[in-house]
Length: 310
Image 1 (tube, rainbow, N blue to C red):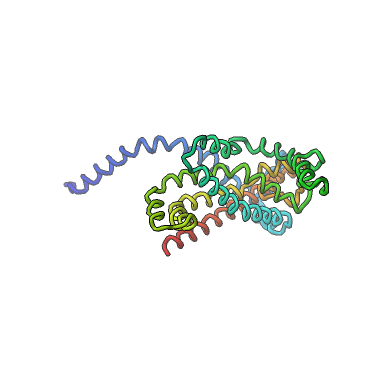
Image 2 (tube, one colour; image 1 turned 60 degrees about the vertical axis):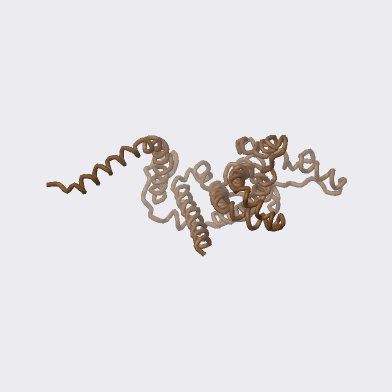
């Protein structure tokens, strides 16, 4: 005879499975898309990284083991590109997050016409990065008619001549950083604005009754209330900062940007395919880049977890 308790447990499990069916059905397209367009291509890249695979080559790929990785780690251009990635992320993550928080606090007010300012601050996010890079290519043009050069000429009363902002190694990466912050800060701003609106107003009223200053309200009410939102924004900004590619590619190929000072890891991966026809090297770069981003994300999450437990 069957145990009644076991039968009831099985029935309860069956009811739970039927209850979860609508959720699983709605999640299925997203899961299938991730498997088909993310997981499967990445597995193919992992396999190709162990082969000497050439694009449009009549010869079949031959297995070479970890040769692609050893060549990659001994390539100074790869480490220069990785250093550019680190420089970009080290500046963009804190600066863009701070600006986004400032803008979110600025527009988190009940004023007439505030929705117009919210739309204006968010407007650059709507534009595709290709269009933004083309516009900034005109702004950073090396000619005297470039918008930035014209502004500098006007402000300095002609004492400073035209500068090659993208061609100069000292200003090429800061120019791309400025472009990226301008284009992406609105997205983080909207997320932080939603977090600000979730903070109960009673906390600010209690702080005012305790005669807390604006800075004390920001430090002891706003920041703790935004903690989880800030963690999410920093993690998201970190991932986006490390996979910077579009603006770098456009400004190098058509804007005359200094290649050594601005090329990133993803830029090297694409040039390995389209310029060198080397699928194996591009796959190895992709795998290494994925491991680097994954390691940084895990470290950030562990640090955050330790802070929350302290």
